[in-house]
Length: 124
Image 1 (cartoon, rainbow, N blue to C red):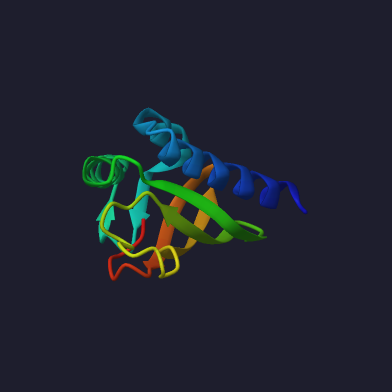
Image 2 (cartoon, rainbow, N blue to C red):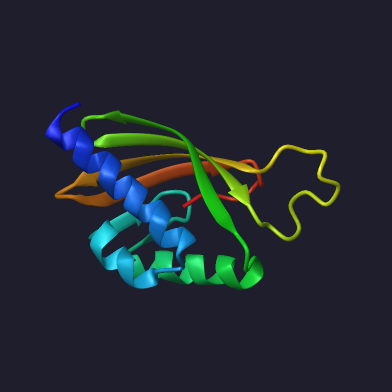
């Protein structure tokens, strides 16, 4: 794996650690100042912090588990599972909701993100 790919993987893992740790301050180190979330149709770190805050308020126990992470230079593709969604799987018979995200890393930070979730809502 190249240095660029190692850096891309590391920043991706830091993003999920920040989410699981409810560490909104870490977004300043993980996301580029001009970060663009294509699924949310927003730009900037503040928009992500707002979206995460709303998710944490609605689902206090939410956690993201990375199942697969594939890295190609500055691009990272991630398949993850969401746990702790209060309204996602009432019977426990359905699989946990999943997300597919692709992000581009530039200068050691995530510059762009694309994503889909099985919840019918945009990821990221």
